[in-house]
Image (cartoon, rainbow, N blue to C red; front, top):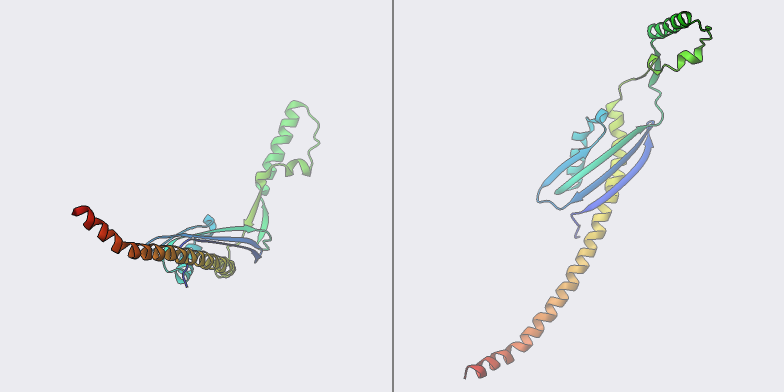
Length: 189
């Protein structure tokens, strides 16, 4: 079966608390050339994606783009910088005393200082993340390969129709050829 060298496949799924999108593109190229775009925190996925793509696509310039958004992370928490919060409160009270302002400082006022809070995440389980990304990548690859087969079939039909036109032209030339030789002989004499 003829397959096109160009193709595109996309899949999106939520797995492991992450919204994962994988897009695969390829164009004609003499050898296998791979490039990927993954979020910086998931750079360890690049080599695995390259092996995945190489096993499914023999040659061509292949680009895989992965987007990962955390939608539910049980491995995260908020850390409060108590020392910094105390310093804010002390500075505000000192300022209030110096300017003769009433001390109406409350918890909501201190909470507005976003730098006293830090969101902490535990490191990702790389094998679990790869398993989730690989599943979405397999679906994108299925769509990619289906597009290549569909386009390949269109190319096959186009080539066969052009072949028919060429064959008709060859028959016309073969039919005309004896008369052309006779016409040249007449002109030469």
